[in-house]
Length: 126
Image 1 (cartoon, one colour):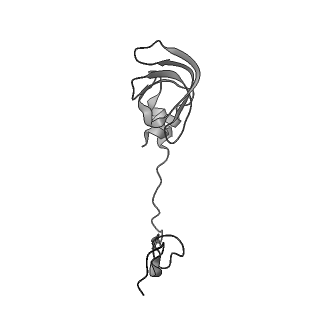
Image 2: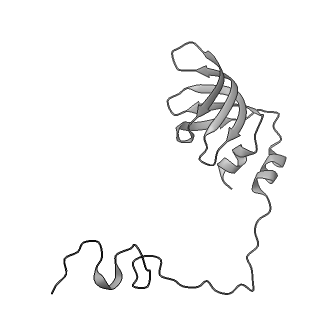
Image 3: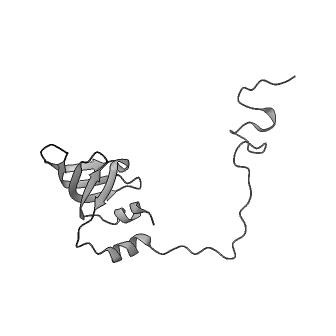
């Protein structure tokens, strides 16, 4: 299971987000994007060696998140079940996938390495 899918289910929960630079951001989750960008409201941001700041909204870039501290009263069992969902069952009678040349083959039509004629400005041997 992906952490992002779990965090997406935590809308309206109060959490603390610690960033890679040591900043701690506490607030209520508005939304979480698939790239783990976190939108928070009613925020208290504490930068190391500075006074805490109160902000109305903040957007935290996903690749800067070190960890997310969840509230103690959060029911993890139900939240995890919702985030996992129903696993997809493989089709037993499905036909095998068609094999096609993805890029660069003579029959590809466009793009790739050019197929028979070399393509993309290569010198031809006459």
